[in-house]
Length: 370
Image (tube, rainbow, N blue to C red; front, side, top):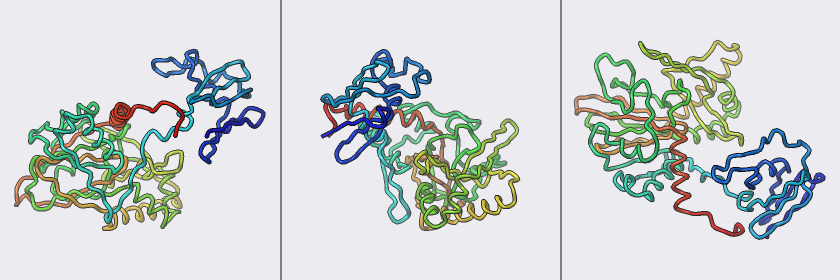
């Protein structure tokens, strides 16, 4: 059963449902009123100017009516709000954090995801939940990943172009184009916005070494907070800069190594030893930051959190660039060629596609929430 009561002289509404209570302000309920004078029925966009509503707005009456909540406000406005909107679960399911001992193995088939919405939704749900997914059966063509990208959202173009080579070349102008190992990092923290997802497609990988490494940055942040809360706090507050420059490009941005959402949970991690540029902060701040960065570095490079894998031709790794640190072992070309292709897809289009597919697969149930 669901019960409703008013308090604070009608400025607060308390909704009791299944032994849990949620409290709402009258003003918040008024600006979200679903009636066609307040919200456009087609777009859901607000038609009134919410900032002009009275700050002391009160509710005069509220009662549960079937699957809705009938409300009458002090300004004379009446509406019925679906209970499901007030009791709804979060838009996105929870993520599954992992370390090296319990790392998941999310997999998808390219052809199935390309032609079947259910398979594509499963791929996107795994990507959201685990931070990465391994796709098999990708055509052995330079732009073999492109049709699947086009099913999700536009390819993000950068100064590298659209889909770019990742292989050793003479006169390399970026360390990814060498045979050296790469420390765990996130891509392009010097951009605004930072690319959301990395798509890495293997055409050939016969070289000795060159294994990919993955670390769940959210798990690393959690472990740091448990073991060294001072370091964790520092890395959420200090905002180092990041910079990339070449003959035709100059990119700069800044942000903390651990960025939190409004609930205080990690929502984005950054790490890029190659491009970080720490400003000349107060010496005491720098001392704390450098010690905190060292503690974080030891976590993300240790065996405790590191997953190793080596892509085979026709496989593709899709990675959450806001969550995962990725790297690689050094490799030698004596065994053969290592040729991968890489592209970016932004976070908003990926999340939108996943939510729309889920909505289409599971229409909202009618009636009062169970």
